[in-house]
Length: 394
Image 1 (cartoon, rainbow, N blue to C red):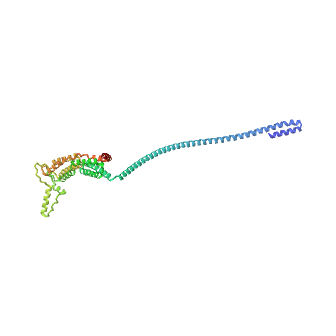
Image 2 (cartoon, one colour):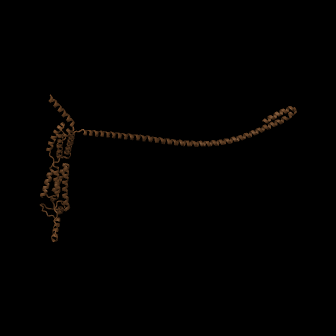
Image 3 (cartoon, rainbow, N blue to C red):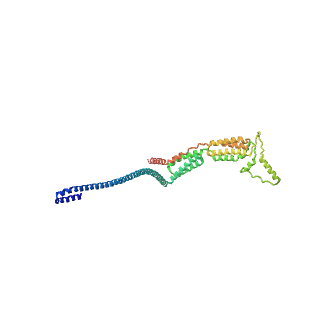
């Protein structure tokens, strides 16, 4: 277009110099040239536009592919973000669970610590209380006089006397303990023990009159009967009498055997005696006992006597009498009641059976109760002494 303008300007300048005819002749040429240039420019512009269109289309396709790739990447990133978010949510849930467990454990730990602390505090308080009590007891012990020690010793003796009397039925030991306690109270010189000694004197007098069974003596009598069971004759004849004598602890030693024909005859006679026991009976004999049956009869009688001794030691009247009755019944059924030894054993068992073990002992606890209230007795004694002094002054 710039060239066309220049050509136009040159033509205009030349036209001034030329004639009008020349101008007329040159117009068609100029128009054709101008048209050609215009056409050429249109073609160039069309080519340029086509090229630009092609470039734009290629750019759009590349941009579309890039956009598609970006969309794919965005989708992938979105998926990853979603996965990360789910993982984060799981982690948050796991962290919340852990925090909950930690809170529970913390509460349990705090509860345990508080319990331990309470127990420890309770133990410390108990230990402190025990130590305070022990210290006070030591202080009281250190502050006691000889009279206080004698009164404490007397209180212990009175408690021992009550226990021995009512738990073991030991009248002799209880009486000695009461007398020793009275001696301690007398040596104390405390005016507050007058009522205690008065009650103690009555208890000693009552206890001396109490009649109790001689447990040791009765037990010795039963023991003698047990040791003599093998000497009681059985009702039926039996073998093995010589063997029973050999088994006794106090049996005499057998005579020494002689040699020769005399020794042979003695051994034969002895063997015959072991096999046969000759016995005269008033009633007809229907059976002969063997050695084992005789041993069983004697051991059953000994067992009844032993159980009776157990009942005696335990002061069980029913056990004691039942076993003695059983011994009498067994004696009458299996032993010879006509023999003097059997009669003596039966009489001894009957005498033992008639002994009463259940004895009511007197109450000797009044002196102990009074002595445990020695402080009150001292106050009463001090008041009585003070009123007496005022009466003398008036």
